[in-house]
Length: 172
Image (tube, rainbow, N blue to C red):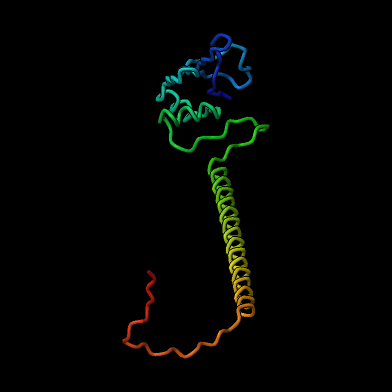
């Protein structure tokens, strides 16, 4: 069976690949291939693909690797969804799920913060009411003590004023 896949040709730490048509029995490092269909420079993200030839080979029954499938979709040679090419050992990153969890965490934190603030305000209000009540009791107690201590003086009738001037004595 024929397969379209990548063949590495770059140096160490400089990944670049050929897109080749090869027999599926040949290993990826064997160097054996039937036809070069393009190239891919991973560092510079340069993709060159002979789209017409790839479509022709696929119609004749050639299989495409998942990475080549994704490259062909990004180059708009074929249509469809990209495939997950991450190794099975590493988890698949679902950004929508991560964002939803982050939003839920933020909402929970905001609700907790709001609840703490409301509880604090209620506590302060209760303390203020308690303090005001204590002050009112102290004032009432103070007024009752002053009322008991101050003797009540009965007022004497006020004499009417006369128009006569008061007598003054002069000393010489």
